[in-house]
Length: 407
Image (cartoon, rainbow, N blue to C red):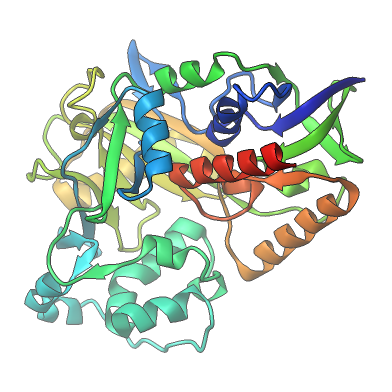
């Protein structure tokens, strides 16, 4: 049996970052990845002789976090995005929109328009996401801007969602602001995500093997191989490491890339829009704008739609239905009835589903893994099973690095 100082399960961004930070410690590190292509959601894919960046994913962090700033700027070729606006569309059939994040000054101007969107709302006595947002913005703005969006994003009633991710995602300002917070630096890779992953794979011992169980610090794979690690770091969903009937419910995502002959919106500083009305889509990103300062050569009017769904949904594998629904949506909003370069990409496990029940199951499974393994650590969105960004993965990596060095 091969022995290692550290075994990392998952070669997504989190796993590769941890390996990268450990690479100069003298530790023998093994990374195990079920997919043939490392990188997780941080990927560059090919389509009609055009390289597409899966996402987009931004590298953003607090300006005062010197650890993350030094690591990102010294390790990768990243360029800043100086200003990025977003808007939220909230009517069913009209193109009414407001700045996102919401700002009080603009909401005061459209008060009458908002009233016409309200129905008889019955607030629920909930300790979850719904309640915390109502306390933040009030019943009116919750119903117009958050209720439908939340249902589309997570596929469950807002009252069933935990509060753990709400403070990260939701804020309301006094005046119109940049989409990112004033104290955040925002970066994007000059040459795309492939360059980031290639950099991280340098001096990385990664094996294409699916892990099926971890007990007594022995990692077993589907290829019937066993590896022993003094430290085990999991970046994958905890139910995948245990022979258990307690399966976690994750949210899938369809990313639809497409091009139009005309701009969907006129403001060149708007990078993406959020959809708050009852539509299956949650966000549309203008890739031409996001990547225009980089080496990427996107054509004009090139967009990506995010469509959260369940992996069991019939529409997941029906590209014709996806296209028809998208065109209907674009037509109702922007009178666009034709799209070109249509390319849907399925991400089977995009987000942990943060319902109270699901998070309780995840915590139980992590505790079970701790009982049968010493020095087991959890990192990243699925390892810790919580909503997080790439900056959180880097922070996790440095914290685990400290624990391993001091042990």
